[in-house]
Length: 523
Figure 1 (cartoon, rainbow, N blue to C red):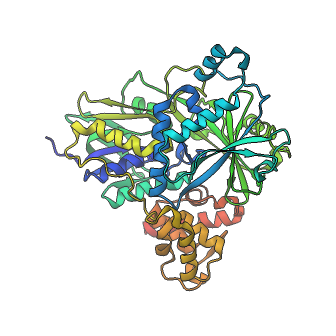
Figure 2: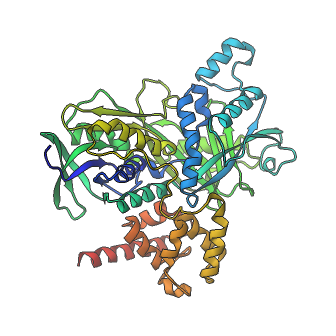
Figure 3: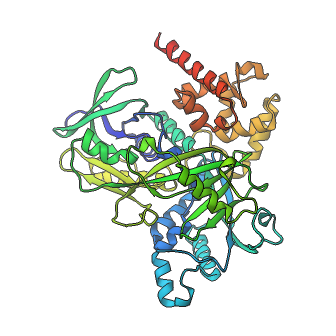
């Protein structure tokens, strides 16, 4: 067999690409990953930030996807208890609400019980939640219960017409940090992670792939690989046609999901699951302490995925949707930030963007050097997708020690799920200058690695310049050296959400520091 520079070359530094890189590197395979921008620079930093089964997917009878996703919630939670944690979701029930629903379950209900047309009866919702509980094999998360909203604190922000609700469990995750930590772990196991590196072309050369790169400084580099994986996310079809020169009948459907962040709308720590008359749902989630996250939309996206933004129409849609439930109307004046990402859903021919499958498809072209194209997927199933990718590539791998990632902590996650508060207390005891919220933020972002970041500091001044919102020069050094951050946006909008608390001048100062570090490293 012809000698190659690497066993596997991966195009794309989103959650799927980094997840596959981690899994492959942990099997003693040589791996190179190239991302044209920042890790999690597009879809993987623009999710609703949940490890969830997808309750509404039950109405499309996507049982396998829901089961796999539900099982993964606790597997992932155990591996990253710093960046993920359990959350309870409150689903208010309105017996009079009618839905314009076009799901297989709704059509079946309409045939069996025509008098229920346009409604989801309480028993149907409760049965769906019972199935949701049963499919996941829960060991950590509590099950569903019924709430009296006239007595429960969750009813206070809602309009008085909502008297009953169902409360169930899912899991929050810091999506951008999930991607970065997968990349860090892959690199620790031998992978080469190249950010700001564009794949300009890739062609089969005998039984190898010859991949041409453009590095951040503009210089070129060629790498040969036994296997090429196209995990380009929204650009997967573009990579196929423009970078690889391959015409494929398989395509992705680009569906834009937009979110708004408002000032805090309620004073408890539970989330809301709201049903709309259009058959869609949205979440309203406590966010970063002082805010509420509301989303998401489902809109066909045309044009460059990097130009996705939350349109005025989507902002109005989300405000009006939430206002149908909250006593105090939600308006555009409440919005402090918006974000939007493009989901690369496998084009399964569904007419509705909402109905398009969220399942992933792995397409292997083994006519010559193997090419694996990754279509679709969601953050909840990224680890299972990586395992499935390695299984599909098994016959073409030089070695394979088998699956290993289940239960193995990501960097900083080497502590029990129920020990997070203990970690916060430990940080404050060792570094008395940390206020509780500062210690909590560092623990949430870095877990046990917060000790490495603080590196024996005895006073806040030991951490260098204060950029505001508890962001210090020591943290910037960590993010540069260990987490691939190269711009202020990488720091304040992806590795963290400190941009919500920082002024424009403070963010500009972070960018100045980053540019100075670029010059220092280039000298």
